[in-house]
Length: 260
Image: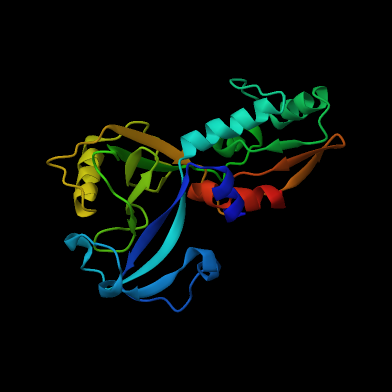
């Protein structure tokens, strides 16, 4: 649960989030009803957070208290938890097929295998509904560039579904994005994209004449028409699949794992 997560993982923090929109919505997603998030839909003028002037062209906003995970540290801790339980952890071994995965699980005397290979499922399982959605980020030093609220916009004129504009304080850094581009396989940030990210940072309230990026990142979300939580039987051995979460893996990983 959220409470358990916050109690155990000290590098998860709760930060105010503002999602900018031009018009209020009468069809809000179900997660907005969770009382722990303190969700509100309100005129932008009533949002109790300092808003950059560049974003005041929007009339309304969703505001809520967002759990933010310092994901690299979380992954390190999860790996440590496994090793502390004397479980067999092997990294760097690349499986070539689901049959190889099944054979390895049988050799290790497992009851089942769980395929959480993300984009790798395209090769392992022949699931070519995984084009990969490319995302790009700039990193800023949070200690010298203090930002304590999430800012997000994916509506015109500033943002779009393909080029969302967002800022997320996370751990020691502030990330500024971004893009959501299916089938774009470029591993480096293009020159024009660096310019776009710098403009995004300025739009989101970072003084880019004073603060410069301290890092950058390119990644490929395992985008799929729907999350794959399927069960296959290979020679009598169960193989569960749990992949295709797009950009929502950190958000829905617990629920997806329980369902799987």
